[in-house]
Image (cartoon, rainbow, N blue to C red; front, side):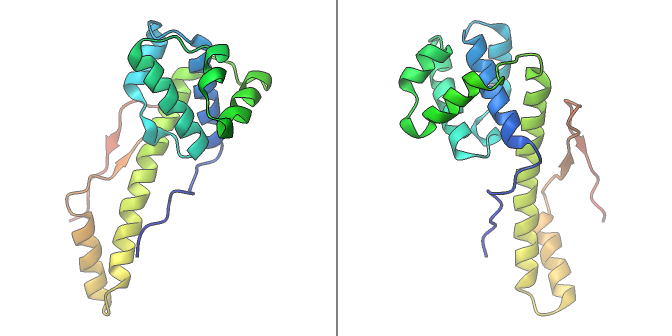
Length: 166
């Protein structure tokens, strides 16, 4: 069985993804220190929805080339399927850079949680293949062996490792 966790989103994750994209576009300058810090911390896996992932990849491409990416410029290159989202961002008060740092921390935590969920789903699926409960427990232990389960609090920037029971 494969893990099917791509649809799992924490509450308000979509709005946070949109808010981060809009804030970066609003700042629009690859030389801006806040934009540079954001691009060093974020990657495409921070964005769980297809539309925001595509928009981030476009932003990252422009950033990597050193090109400016304000709303007017961005709207000329965005694919038609995501155009409505850019238009909505520019109209619906998503243009706010005040929460950019905390929103980035949340997206990083959500990315970590999604990865951990995949690990746990795979462990449970492997245990379901076993016939005896003891074998199921061993399968879970083997699946989790070497995996570091990390809890990241949304307001903290440093992950706190959780010790595994032995």
